Image 1 (tube, rainbow, N blue to C red):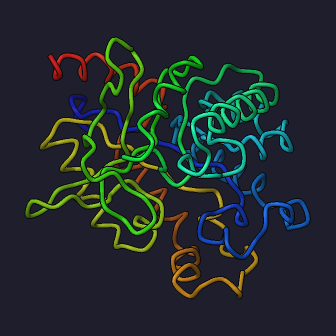
Image 2: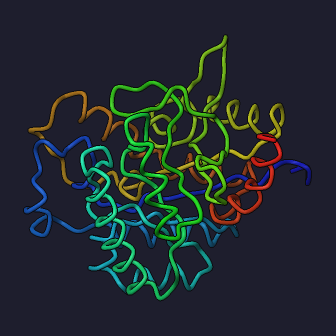
Length: 290
């Protein structure tokens, strides 16, 4: 690749198959510990994939998972990846309120740092749930010493989204170095299109993601932010038959091809950790705002 192209942010939202928002109405949190635990084997497969490709990324991890998988957390950190927070148990920020959010951040950060043995400076909200209802969340994060968040999806979606938010890294708090790095969108005919990974990457043809990342990198000269989940490379995971049909379609479609698509994407573009991307983009965001 040409050296002038940006280094994109590669991220993994570390949660197990039963912790996803799609199943939150049919799988109770109090039953999580009774279900088949597959997150470690899937994360180890991801670590092997990243090692084969020679790339580093960021693992936004639930505190609930970190507390139960200390050796995994230490392997992730030991292989040079960033370990960051995904909250405690995937509760959405707007349901927590400011005080509950602060407690959630403290609990999850302690569990992750104790497990991984490294400092946590990055955060991603479950289901990209920092939006127009929760501007106070940035103040809470900055107040606890976080350097960045990647919690905003600047689109309209039936489960999440903040359509009016900036598409690229911005400083949400005056006089603060704290930055928000939205997940990637592309534009077409004046519309924003979700193009940052997850189900969109898994379900849509690979060519769409290639086009979107090329647009962001080559036309707009900005890094893309890509995410996926460990369960997305696990076609043999249990089936939740009592979940709504739409949720099952979103969750299970193309699990069998996800790993191959990921390898292609990792090979085709340049990738790195989110904390390093945040450091590079922070100065640019200030300059553009001036």
